[in-house]
Structure formats: C-alpha cells, structure tokens
Image (cartoon, rainbow, N blue to C red):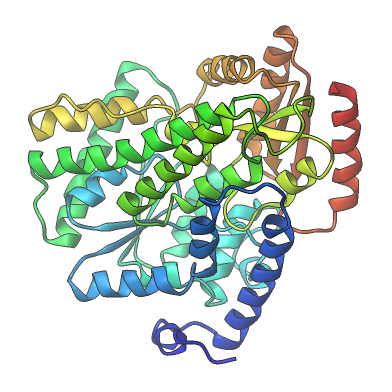
Length: 424
C-alpha cells in the first residue's frame, strides 16, 4: 500500500517491498504487546505515535536536518558521548537493532555464533531495511566486545565507520586513554560537521543530554512506588525511544508523563494489584523491537520495576558535571561520567555488582531476571558473579539466555512462570 514516505524511502535505497512487510509485522507485534494493556497512561500516546512514525516522520526530520547541512551520526553504544555530536550541531541516533532481520545475509559475512544484536544491525544494512542507517553520514562503533569490534571492520565496507576504543580496566592509565579517545572523537566530529565545538556549545549540549537523563531518573523514581504506576514494558519503550527521538522534545514529553504519574502515585493507583511480584531486569540491552522477555514476564503475573542495562539505568544513572568553564574542563567531565558506566566489558567489574544489589534493594524487588543474548560472553560470564552478589543480599535470580527468534517462547514462559511462583 503506497505511503507518503515511499519516495523518501526509495531515495534512501530501501527495499520497499520487504520494508512494507517489516512495518506490517512490527505494527501487529506492537499492538499485541503494548496496545492491549489496561490502565495505560495517557502520556504513552506520544510514545505510540513515535513508534508508528519510527521510519516515517522521524526519518523525514533527519532528511530536513541534512538539507540544512547538519550531519547525522549513528551510534551503537551508550559510551559514545552524544554531547559532542550535539555541540557540533549534529544529530545523534541510536542504531542497535532488536529484530531477526536479514539473518541469512548477515551469516554470509559473520560467524553463525555471533550475538543476535550484531547480526541484526548488519542484517538490517544488507537487507536495506533501516532508514536510520541509510541516513547516517557517520556510524560510530566502539570496542565493548570482540564481536562488535570485528563486525565493524566488515561493516565499514557498507557504511562510513569510526571506532572508539573503550578501555577494559579503570586504572589511571585507562582513564587517560579514554580522555584521549574523547578528544579524538571531538576532532573527528568537528571534521565531519565542519563546525568548531566551543565551550558555550558544549555546555548547552551537556545540559540538553543531562535534562533527558533527569527526566528518565524522575520516571524511575516514580515507578518505584507501590502499587506500581506504570508497566515495565512501557518504561522499556520510553528508554528505547530516547535513543532516536529529538532530545528536547522527548524530555518535555517524558516530564509531562511524569506529571501524570505523580498524580497516579498520590492517588495510590497502580497498573497491577499491590501484591504483584516486583521483578528487575538486568544484563544485555534490549533494542527496538526486542520486547519478547518483558512481555512474557508481565504476562506471567509479575511486573518489572527496573532495568539494569544500557537501555535502562546504565544509560541514565549518572549526570555529566556542568561546572566546567573551558572545553578541556568539559572533556574531563565527560571522561569521568562515561568511565562510570559499568559495562561487562570491564575487568574487574565490582561496580556493577554493587549497583545491581543497591538497585534491587531500593526498588524492593522480589527477584531479578538476568537477561543475556546468546553468544554474549561478557554478560553470560558475569551472570555467575551477579547471582552470587544477589544471593548474598537475599535476592533470588533467574538467568536467561535467548535471541530474537520466537522459537523458545514456550520454554521461556515456563521458566519465568516458575520463577514468579517461587518469589511470590
């Protein structure tokens, strides 16, 4: 069926027929998982609209930005400092993909035992199905895992790629390396945009990104209430959308939604009964449209009250200090803030164990489900230490490894239901 965006998609070299099929499937999947919920907040209508226009209106906005000589920078990781992109008048969009698309094409150039997230973003490119990737003037990778690091070498044959080196430890020399990487990234962004990053512009950009983090922190504080005022899958959607929506508009909308949430909390209104088991998700990120596990959890008599992941508190927990007066002082503040990210790529990673147990206690959870993508070695291995830390705190954990396919849904449902019954 023709749409107002067909000409735009054709110019982006999308496979129009396959793309139409993708949007149809995505629409039904979204409707079944999100629009069937009871007692949903009115503020979620904005998120529904954004998802309905995920490849339409937002892509049109990106094309309009390009027409104004702004550069579109795509990223795969929360380590990439968006503040620098905004300070150079660029537009930052997240590119991680959460669907089993283009798998066969991806496996022609990647090992079969590569994690689903990597195969997905490569598959989307090879199958010509992602208008975000096709809109990018630069794609920024990072060395958070060996799979991504080597995949970027191949991906560079299909798109302009720049890779940031992420330290694997947190000693003083590692912090020095990371500061140098941020400075190198700043130079690259200035080169590709043709714009000089000044202290004034970097300060303004830092405030914009911090304001978005503050709005999401506010959301997380409100959902800690009992009864729980918003579903975990709705908050996951909010976090997912934060990676590609306009940051100022998004922050305004989430603060409006939080106003509505505050009224609900004051009225002691929840989306589930007060005695519903409270669970926390931990582990790998869940990119759009990876909603399988949250849906299974909340269809099994529990509610998700927190996400310890890159699409969750790992991305929003810390702010960049805004006291710097010079570009150099601000780069130091960026280096310090981003080095506090507790990704499983680090060794040792006791920060993450401390953060998970503290978060689980603060949210008064009955249990934690640790989510790992198949073949994601860092998080699969770290799950062992996470479980020990949680056990010491008296909090049960269920470790789940899965991918983006629907083949294991019944098996996962059985395991999740048993875990919910146990913690109940």
